Image 1: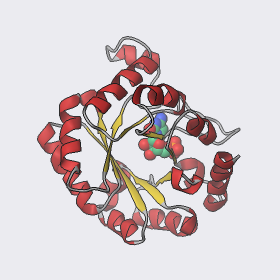
Image 2: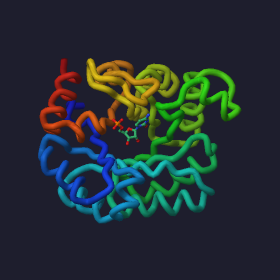
Image 3: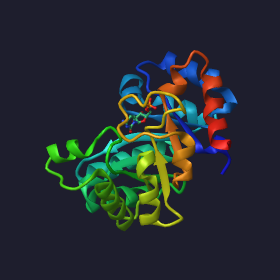
Image 4: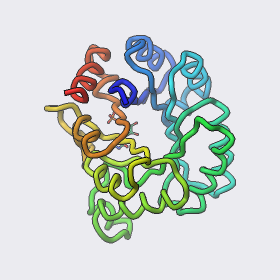
Length: 231
Ligand code: C5P
């Protein structure tokens, strides 16, 4: 895969003008965008249809954790919008993941990705919610559960990507948020890494947000990400 196809830029904005401005500034340099709950809730699904109409791929980060019937309905609605990826929480168990995968069958382009442990969580955070063991053990366990449910891949931090790859084999998609550019502060990402480290560890895609979208020159920042991947 070309570096350009591996980079997903997160459009974490609260208004349409800001999202459109980023897409316009990145132009042909970005082919894949993540739309999350903030933008979807603030501006509605038109922004997704507009991206798809421009030939962009869209990762709709719905982070579904609901009863299977509701999960299936949301996945069908995402598929009808033309998105390429949608997320479901693996902590909801096999039932909701399998419902998502089943609902996605009508949309051959749509991939269901399972969230494992969000990258901001540490071992201590897991203990606080009554989950024993390390984040890496929990990520591996949830990744295997996602594979059992038929998910096409998982979301995993750069530091968890290698364990997930060895647990899932060669074909699974592994999408890693929580990446920071070399030399950049990791911010709130407890298990961050560089784009290159994530791909080397087995990720197929990386999600990069503020490092690009809040940069004075987003296109230049995106080129830095691509250069890191190509180096
Ligand atoms: O931090 P950044 O702006 O690059 O975040 C981009 C995306 O990565 C966010 O939309 C968020 O969903 C995801 N992310 C995550 N865990 C974090 C931080 C960000 O999954 N700790």
